[in-house]
Length: 496
Image (cartoon, rainbow, N blue to C red; front, side):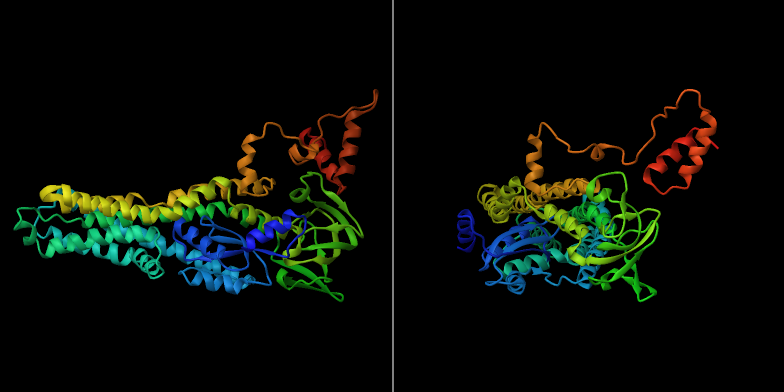
């Protein structure tokens, strides 16, 4: 196979020209979906390595460009009901964000609707089951929950069945569908059971409550995913949306997307630097702590390099763009964090294997439960067996199994990025538990992030009050970062 061939060549000290890319995966609803998607991509000719992450709905793919391309990967996934977004333009990214926002809003409405209808259903099912027309009232309340708010589960299950596969949607659709249809039959034909001396039980509240709680779980899941991606959003926020471009002697405010290599840009005091470049005229101090970890701003003069996302202090200068878009240092940092969040820890690979065979095993156990009750359960065997089947299918939803580890990794890597710590991948994070000593190469990394005057030593016999006032006046006019520390100190001492 190609993965083995590539590994063998690399083990010999040579290399193979491959491309590594991360693509958003659409239409995944559970951990089993991620497992199925990964399996399909792994079996696509030309693919060397794949990691599909359900928590952030992405696929990291390494492939040989002369054998396959993103379009073929997209076609392979579409064949089993999923999709791959291969368009890498800003418009496509914005469209994906909009899709996620709409999905969350729709999910929220369906969750609230299903909970509002399920509450009276539970009350009737628990306390007023013998009242007149109770079954018909419960049928009316349960129908929109199961067939409208829960239709995504039935659509997903049908798509999976069409591709001879199964996932969490299959479990939910089977359990709620069986409970609902059984209840409809018992409502319309109660005499069938009464003729056998049995009571015609209905389980409308079971079907509705299961859908309501699973929708609530999915809503919390989406919220957790959104929170873990906030670190990426914060990093992206370091880059300004617009820049001041010099066109001859004229100044123009343009979007960052239109900046090209070679453009002359102006940076005003307090502004963030938009792209990587080289200072042409002017000078200033620039806060580069987001890259170097050093708290003291660095002086920039003609010929010095500046980087996207760093913050200009009090001066003003013009610079020429050298790296733009995805080539800037900030873009590389964002990509590294995204890759780390999407990578899989060794323990996750074991979880994925379990999730891949989990659904078929659960369906088999549920059917065995039904058969066992029919054969050994006596008069009420079928009813009890049906309840057992529904119970097994409902409680076995494997979402927590596939979501816990990747969500923890996303949160950990994201929190590290927020605090200026870049974690290479999930494996590094998992192995960090064995660390018993940390070596730091410079004091600036662990200081507060701003210089501070601790004390002043005066020569004997000088007028400290007069000199303090003079020194305060001089430092107030300075733009040097250390001058700010001196000014802060004298203000605290109430020097005039």
